[in-house]
Length: 389
Image (cartoon, rainbow, N blue to C red; front, side, top):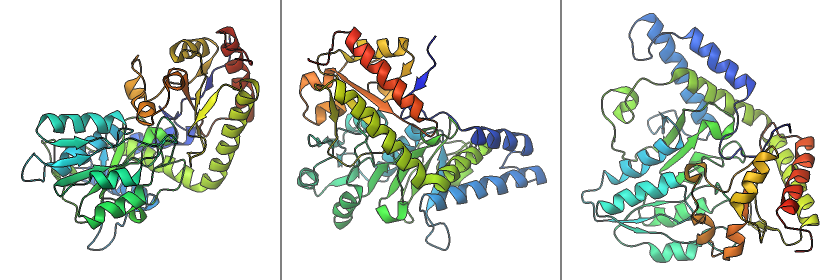
């Protein structure tokens, strides 16, 4: 039985032991409801707000003074993205405005936008260049007088390509258009500063950076109007009602602190491992192609197309060989349709059909990389993809 090599950290980065310990300790220490007025509740509330403040600071939010930003806890990135898109558009007087949502966005952005379109909004889906980044000129040409909202992810979940969010924020700001960024894949892999990005809202998910499953956050800039889409409680200013998940918030905070304490070292190590893995594969399979290789990418993400192979067959072969990876977003897992991200980049069908994603994490080591390359090459050859094809 092969030892499992986990290369699907962009789907979920397994929780760190220290984070799991923090969740357990908080669960046992704070038994009260943070909304209760008795001592047990007040203790829980203080711990929750401490975690919220620390998370905000680590992500670059301004939390002090009269112009403080908000950190709203959610169940994860999907809920945070829904709250941003539906909450920002709900403030509009009519539902016939215009949205700009790039075609490379995560399903948790694309599908709420589709729901808004069904409600009467017009949605533009600009594509990306062949290197995986959106074209700012195209986006600028799509902005209209009645554009009410735009989105752009900070880093693509499939290719790892970083997106020009700061530049797009400037375009939008000049026109009074709020910009939302999905930072789920970027946080914990590259430095992220909410204030410096100048976006209206930013979403994240703890399980993408070795935090616990079941918690994420939406950061909201001071002065940005957001309307609740759920009802039934006073918590978090009524924008996300329901009892807050204190222990998970503590775990999320701990995971961010772990990243902050070793950010430069972790990023450097992951980039080195990623490059080694790509080189080991390309040296034996010259026909293989690293998608987005010439763009600025996350240090942990490699999207490789094994031209001539079927991605689903390769994934199954690698699963049997003990290598966990994917062919795209976990939220679209199981779909036999071509990746919308790769289609939006204008890639050839052969590249899209043979593409898989390998994503590394804090636990990945040199032995994993060496053995993963060996197993991947063996699987490709077994499936008929020799080094001369």
